[in-house]
Image 1 (cartoon, chains in turn purple, orange):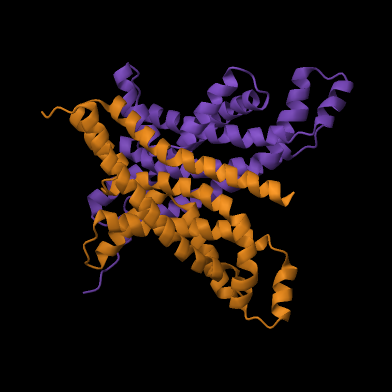
Image 2 (tube, rainbow over the protein chains, first blue to last red; image 1 turned 135 degrees about the vertical axis):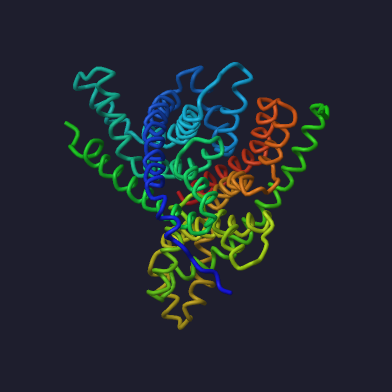
Length: 223
Length: 217
């Protein structure tokens, strides 16, 4: 007999799915906020070769980019407590996402910073701008403009990757899916619906971040 | 309770790492073959197939790898066939890899000037011949570095298959961490294992990129 699909069994849990989606968004927002801040710091340190911190960030970037996110998450959640560092599953999930995105965004933003034409910095200096003003208006902002689309793609990748946080019982969207399919025994239908939700979240977050980029980062011409 | 020395840990993790490597190679090779088909569908002169291939890429790039693995795992089970974890892992990762490689290669194909297609067409080559004889040999040169770079993502992607129960490096690590109560050490070694697999690939990809840039400027 052919399999009878039953999506009503998934709809019965729509409130839980909506809540899971909101939590995935919240996790992404906090993780991405901290991650991009870390990445900006790392990019400046790396681009300006501020010893010895440029080495530290270099090792950090290579370690994170060459290991899987799930292993980083397990290391933080299961491994760090033996050093006396205990945290909730939410804190571990946010920390892992921030640490992961921090490494990727260090490299992305650094590429934007090193592409700053030398003449622009000299021109700004000749206009008697302070070092901090030069950094803010002439180096960092145009750098972020240049790499914003790449940064947005990386944030979306991190959001999709956060589905493995269900493995440490962080109650996000995939956790909700696992719970629902254990109740309604409709694993395939549940995961189809949740995969579609992730797809919509990915498209939404991408458009939202690109809009934010146009409005706040790229928007007004540098004055 | 069994006692594990550090060498027992490393030996067991080594077996897991061998499975990780095997799965990575399988997914990369099969994903490359499927990816080539998706690429042809994406850039070929068939509007309906183009849209289908585009949707395929958007779906696989816009959903978590974990969901893709679950869907393969539970989807095949619907047909009444019992799927072993390694098969679901290999199919899921192959599809995932094919979508990403097709998109990377599309960029490389589109970087070839349009005149090359037109010149090939003026020599009465069929579309397949134009792609095979004229475009792909040139696109291949720019595709090598980003393809190499993506192989790192494939190796890291195999870690997610631990969740559907495939006993590769991460799964082996989880089992050992539970058996030895030494998660810090075990996950540290697991991370080291991935690093040893991925770092040379990253370095190689970066070097290829530099040589290509040097040659084209």
